[in-house]
Image (cartoon, rainbow, N blue to C red; front, side, top):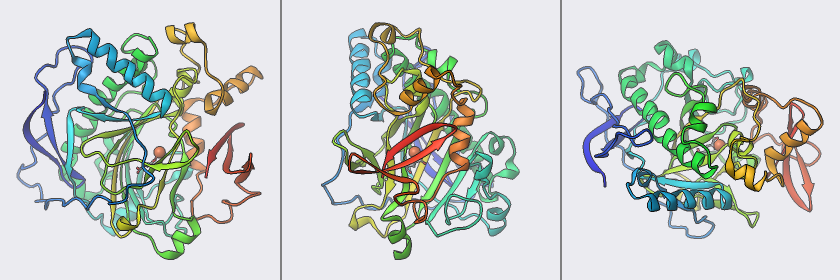
Length: 418
Ligand SMILES: O=C(O)CCC(=O)C(=O)O
Ligand SMILES: [Fe+2]
């Protein structure tokens, strides 16, 4: 179905090859990824990335549905209908899926070291409600805490608009990085939102037009480049192996590149954590809180966490590339009443953020806007190594004998498995 054409590299981050589809005229079909050339004069030579070995461990992995996004462009309506059914099933069962044949394949990467000066000058300020900039490997506060081995760079609107907010070592590659993110947002995510709109029996561009934020390659969302380095025993003991708390993402959809080091876990229906298996070239898709609410609880926000990898990968570095698609900040989310699915079947309010938002509305209180919802969570985030907060009587509670992490943001309770 695809014809590999030009090799494209997002060097300084990683390299990709673009795949170009033959047919690209309809609204939702894949546009070409036209990434600027990697061999322009002045661009540093980037050595090839050798992917780390895949784990040999077989236990504790989830089985997830894989969606072939290219089928959305099929001329056969039966194939497209079947695809929408598959998505509907996967979202309801797992709230999580793999996306394949979306138009880009991840092949290699390079992590560039940022200069000490840039680390200082571009240091993030999560207390302001955004991750924008460089995250040091000492926890999720601006002030350094316990080492967590996680370095990140986050591109928000401000980083796209001002090159001085981007590490200098990445300047020669910004043309490629920007084209890559534009493609992920405007082609891959747009087609994904078309599919999800169809599951809700809404017009194809409903979620894209009415909910997704626009402008800059990532709208009000952000693109994250993260490197998870192995941690010291002290960190591992304090966090009990956890690298990022169990959480749901607050936006619409999250696109994660499937990577060889298995750390991402999802909460299964049998109430256990499972590693997400490595599927070379696939994107792992999370459903965010906004989509749970817009869908009236038909979609469940994906509960996930980052945990230490299986024993045979403990000493490897893990790269993670993630695009967070955010909804329009000024909106207060409610279920899309235009949805024929919601009109026919009503809403599903048995759990999660939709249930909380519904209760709040029923009491006559305003729910937070999308911007408030994401900013409050970023500005008050806690670290997995925080033994003071991560204990019973502080942020942990026992519910039906199960240990849960409980936080409250602007009067909305969020309870997640530890
Ligand atoms: O790195 C990953 O696999 C997931 C990270 C994540 O869940 C997040 O940053 O919200
Ligand atoms: Fe997440």
